[in-house]
Amino acid sequence: MTTTRVRVLIADDHAVVRTGLRALLASEPDVEVLADVAAAEDAVERARIGDVDVVLMDLRFAGDATAGVRATRRLRELATAPQVLVLTSHDTDADILGAVEAGACGYLLKDAAPDELLAAVRAAAAGESALSPTVAARLLGRLRDPRPVLTDREAEVLRAVAAGATNRQAAASLHVSEGTVKTHLVHIFDKLGATSRTAAVARARELGIL
Figure 1: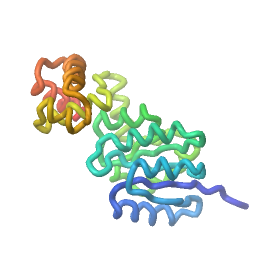
Figure 2: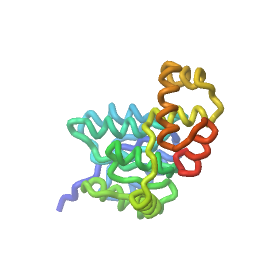
Figure 3: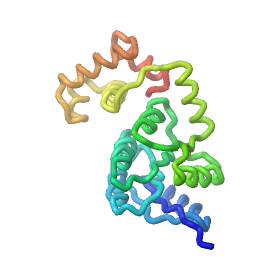
Figure 4: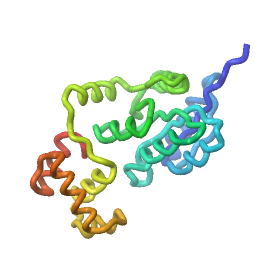
């Protein structure tokens, strides 16, 4: 009897992580690793071939905090869209919600047990959701106690502000105008109920957004 294999693409910017995941997945007779890539955009290009069932996607690549979310959205828009299972060390509300909203069917932390990861890969391939207990609890908590959600760009602006950047510096680093940064800050203040940059950063950290 022939067993259908789950064809996996690994996207992570750490070679050691990719090697470890390859070794784990290769030990399973029903799983095949087609390729591993070090950049989120490379995962999208590789998946265009149309033979990938599941992409194991990290969230942050080379300091880009939203690369994984952007790639997930693009992957899910492909004609032959693979399922995306996020595997990351980051578990803030903003990270989790951003990934789920982008179309990820699952979200695991990198400290997950091997059996949990393998079960999640198989579940993802079957079109089922695969959330770690920690992430599932966080999402349930969000449903019971809704909190403000920042857009990807608002989150980038707030991270720049938290790092001490002026509006001009934030605008330069994000390749937008200073006026755009100010507009984002107005929206951020409104969502967080803050009246200053310091208060917004403090509130975001309190909520787990930063």
